Length: 78
Image 1: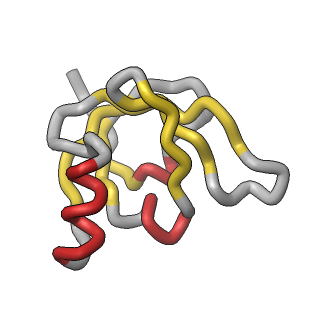
Image 2: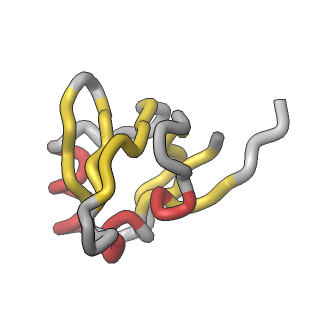
């Protein structure tokens, strides 16, 4: 299967992706890991705010809002 590696910001609405890596500072990394953003976890953008930032993602049965600034740190494949 041929995957395209992108950041979370590149994932289209309602398309499932899988977390590959977190490329960020240790503080942000710890926060994301605590929220379930771990390698291999499936993630799907399901809502976009009227201002386009943040977007809400379904991950591990929970909706979590992520700002574009932080989504750039999350590398995915789909």
